[in-house]
Amino acid sequence: MTCSSWKRFLVPAAVAAVVLAGALLFPQQYYAWISMAAAVIACLPLLVRFERRSPAAGELTVLAVLVAISSAGRFAFAWIPAFKPVTAVTVLSAMYLGPESGFIVGALSALVSNFYFGQGPWTPFQMFAWGFLGFLAGLLSRPLQKSKAWLCLYGIWAGLLYSLIMDVWTTLWADGTFVLGRYLAACASALPFTVMYAASNVVFLLILGGPVGEKLQRIKEKYGLFQNQA
Amino acid sequence: MDTFASYHPAALLGYFMAVLLPAMFSANPALHLLVLLGGLAFWALLVPGRTFAGDLAFYTLLSLMIAVTNPLFSHNGVTPLFFLNGNPVTLEAVWYGVDMAVMLVAVLYWCKCFHRVMSDDKLLFLLAGTASSLSLLISSAIRFVPELKERIARVHQAQKAMGLYSSGSYVDRLLGGLRVFSAVLSWSLECAVETGQAMKGRGYGLKGRSHYALFRLRPRDGWFAAVTLCMAAAVVTVMARGALTHDFYPKMTGLSAAPEALLGYAAYGVLAALPFLLEAAGRCRWHLLLRRCARQDTGGEPGKDGVRWTY
Image (cartoon, rainbow over all chains, first blue to last red):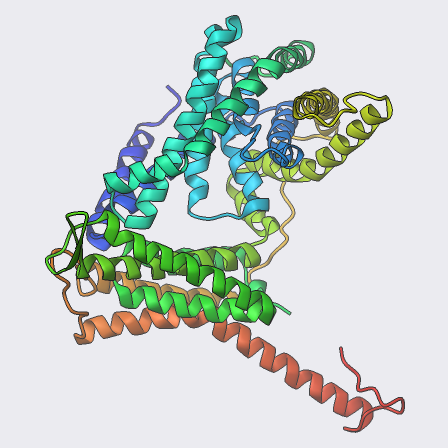
């Protein structure tokens, strides 16, 4: 155990502080406050762990390229509406470079591409949504690498989940509380985008899964990077 | 000539948190109005008049849409105005929608100001002190984005010259795009590893290395931070004592005009107006200095060529 005893109380203390501050200061906008704080706090542990590990220079630059290509890909495929390669790049990085790398690529892609598209209260939610999808794909790397069917399913589920998480944000943001009617309406109006996200994920993962996977595997083995990850 | 943006990034970040958090998470219409006015005034100084007018039209439409849709989804409140499909449209829900619209537009305006004032070098400077690996990762990613865009264009042109995917069909274009993407990825991954090895060769990650600080704290940063802190502390204290709570449902409570609440409004008003005031003061000073320079150079008259010097 490298953690000293008082540090173990940091996360519960942070959660308690957030809840208390919300109850005292923002009683009417409690839900919006809590959800925003939750998105931020959910991103912190993995970011802190990454920082503590002080990764090798090669790992940093490889991850930076993956983050950059998922942001640049948004421009390259701009002629197809709602076609974002971010999820696919995140999932592929997670499958071959481990859950932590998946989280980092997903969360930082949201942050970096928002330097071009505009930062706002939605940034933590996007970071959390993409980071979480990457982390999960890293945990499921074995079935995802073996079967194309699982990869397709994950692409669909990722498009759906991303859309559902961002609609929660829209609802909380527009109403201050969670109004089910508004949420359903937001989901319905975002349906074309959701379908497009899921379809683009599947297309991307099916066509690029093989070649990109080989490239990442090759980099990993040839240069001995990302070896301490599961 | 950006006066406000020239303050220290840490003070600026603290300021934006202090002004945005109470606005985003309170339900007090007076606070929302104050923050909207402050943001609008500051944004008006940052952009040309035409851009400002265009923005204003767009956000007015957006806020109207939010204000109108709220009573359709929310049927809380005790004062029905009329019934739509058997559901009451209540006065409280209408006001709540208006308040939400004001708050949303205000926060969007402040986000635009944030985007303009806190450029990525400032954010990375702040991050570098606490998280050096992450900030290096983010800054190299930001540097790679334009490089990758250029590589994508180059590979695309090369493939076109070879006669690949020359038909205009969507499937062809999509497959071609993916092939370019894949080629650029392998090219860039290889380069990235080499960059990493070069960094290692030059001592990246060794103990005892420091980072270069772009920004230094100056006395005026201290003043700015102190004013921000005092005002924010006043607002938070008043909020925590419950003097600024305002309920829309079930029945609207009137806006509190108790001395304590007024103090809270005043403190928040100063806080929200701070960027506008500093920026405006900075501009006035700049113009006065310009005029003084022009007078010294030409004795107060336009130069021989009839052109007045400007700097």
